[in-house]
Image 1 (cartoon, helix red, strand yellow):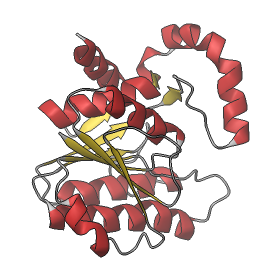
Image 2: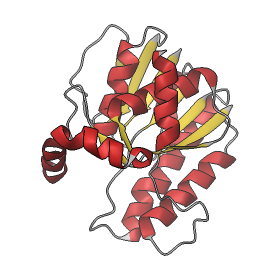
Image 3: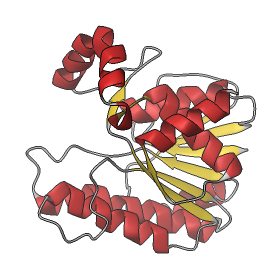
Image 4: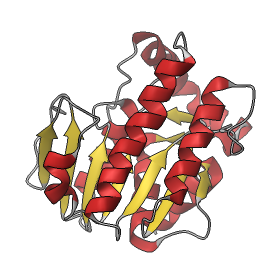
Amino acid sequence: MNIVIFGATGMVGSGVLLECLEDPRITSVLVVGRRPVGVTAPKLQEVLIENFADFGPIQPRLATCDACFFCLGVSSAGTSEERYRKLTYDLTLAAAEAMVAANPGMTFCYVSGAGTDSTGQGSRMWARVKGQTENALLRLPFKAAYMFRPGFIMPLKGVRSKTAIYQAVYTVMAPLYPLVRRLAPRFTTTTVNVGRAMIAVALGGYDRPIIESPDIEQLARERTQ
């Protein structure tokens, strides 16, 4: 299976990338981004682009991919709704529309978030925009599309957040994660399990398009069995 990953330099994306590189069922991994991921592997290819509004030049390469793992995203903290929508809805749909035009047989996996508002009409800005993005993706004629809604994600295997304050929190939380996992199992997962769940869905599908943290954990367990 050939995979394309967006957002592989971020915390979630880099974790997903590691799982793809380690899985023998993944034949090739194409990473699309603005900066190199800093990883080399025989089955890894990178395409660096500046204009995320125009994916036309790379559509022939997208056409060879069986699934897309879209992990690109920004925090809504201190961001206006106009800018957040541009970086969340507009950018994601531009990429997704280019991919479905190149290969409608592709499976699209989008990293959203726990608490996303499926109505797209709620009072919380980020949840509303995420919900509108999910709904637009689900309307596109992909073979299948899945919206991943993890809650708290613990980075593993050396993966780090690029945001210093978030990384400080993860560092403090690392020894406490087993306890947090026991106290809030429905809202916690890891970068490893997000990656494994995405691979499982790309290979075998799932019975519903919205995938919450418990689904991610279940899919990851099935992947390792």
